[in-house]
Length: 268
Ligand SMILES: C[S@@+](CC[C@H](N)C(=O)[O-])C[C@H]1O[C@@H](n2cnc3c(N)ncnc32)[C@H](O)[C@@H]1O
Image (cartoon, rainbow, N blue to C red; front, side, top):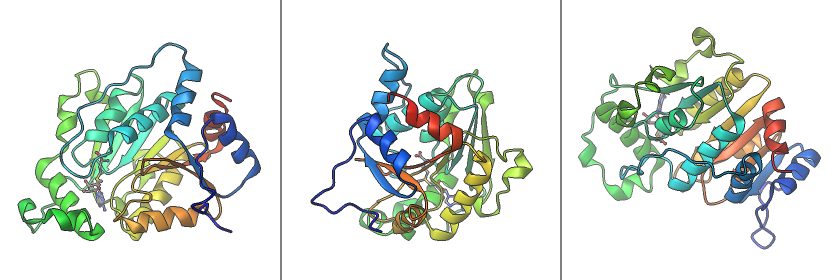
């Protein structure tokens, strides 16, 4: 089965009803939607304008784009999670988004290697061209940068929001969700840590454990120019499950169980 539509017939879906119908009649494959499908769901859920809190994007490489940020926030507002888990804190840009746009009773966990991770290579010795063309070099830089700079966006969270954030520092390849009481209790997992096949595979397996039979898993860097492993991995999943890809972003979403069905119904 072809997962990708050919260039000639490729047209992302443009409303929630089309997506709903597609998911009701397909059990696998990539489905492409315009970002406005997510924003239409927000409008359907609340006729008054819905605000979002966002920092000016980082000039550093490695964080989500503005459109990805708006999409992520919309997913949070639609799912109304009680627990969110993020692989890949980096400088805390997306982490702050997840905290500041979720409800007061939502706990947000974010995991990264932490300041114990010391890069052998000075950050200013990485060539810009390499960072933008080589996934392994890009990952090496990101690991070094988060170790050196830390999650500084989270430091300006309000006193009310800070207690809802739990920053975990460890290699995600040895992470055990059960040890943190997270099995089957997380509503949204954002997978944006290491981009190699081993790490994405382990992070996704743990994401599945955390959402259990209901929740959303969102990958970043799907169809990235440099992190091919993520794209290959997600396309592999789409041989057996429906994966929703958002046009003009590198976000791919798996909708699982009741949370997935509830999400699909909004705005139909
Ligand atoms: C692309 S950045 C995350 C960006 C962040 N989500 C944002 O949008 O602002 C990826 C992060 O994954 C972390 N990472 C890479 N491999 C990891 C591993 N094995 N365990 C934990 N974190 C890892 C890196 O240190 C880096 O900070």
